[in-house]
Amino acid sequence: MKIYQIDSSARKKGSTSRALAKKLLEKIKKPGDEVIYRDLDDEMFFVSGLTESGMKIDEKDQTEHHKKMFELSDKLVKELKESDVIIISAPIYNYGPPATLKAWSDLAARIGETFRFKPNGRREGLLKNKRAYLVITSGGTKLNSNEDFLTPWLKFILNFFGINKIDIICADQMALDYKKSIRDAEKQIDNLSRRRGLNRTQRLRNQLITATLVGYTCAGKSTLFNKLTKSNVAESTKAFSTLNPTTRKTYLSEDTQILLSDTVGFITDLPKDLISSFRATLEEIGQSDVLIHVVDVNDKNYEEKISSVENTLDIAGLQYSKKILVFN
Image (cartoon, rainbow, N blue to C red; front, side):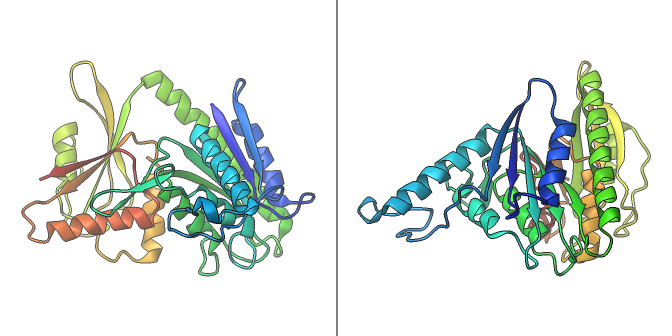
């Protein structure tokens, strides 16, 4: 496995984000793993002088600066493509990302390399089957508050690249209680490492395919779940009757078992506070191999509801690389 560690703090020494990222790396690295390290404070170019969209400059207009910029961009894209796991450490600077991290994202966003646009205009990230760990630190800004513009932006950028499995370790508001913030972050690393180890062991032992049902409320998810798993999960017409997923083992064939999970039904214009609850719920089953989107085709507004579910998944950072659309 290749682990790509990216540090973005402007501080070489005494950086909490760098120290926590190093501790996380030590926890998840296994014998034989290869580490690719990138310190954004060592070398970075800011995109400038473009003559076309999509990171293009006519060759006749390229300066020595531009040539070095494209050379670095090629390196960053190559590092991303080759990695299996990505660790990004980032302090919140003035409520947003370090300038070097924003520059990194601009140089890594290459059409046809890290993302593309489908014929229907929808974007698609090209970096599939990767996991990212974000190590976020702050002095006074609370993680995921209205003042935190780093965390949602960074998750969106990774989703844009196709990286949808994201875990966050945070030591926020360190100015209020530094020791507590560090203790909490170290506990998150320990729990994450333990959970990842258990999940990996369980998967290796069972070799099961995992699938998750999602859909607009009253689309028939629970009905389908009950039919497939011979269960008796309550089929409610009330939105948010539960935020807890239900998981059962079932068979695709005599020789093939899967773990199937049912989740809460979506609605249009999901409130922000509930989006975080959705994300927490779905992250419990974030190891799913496939997302099954159930649609009530008898609903005259079914196309709008498909878009609503897709948009909610986008906002929650839960775009999956493998999806099946099921018309009920």
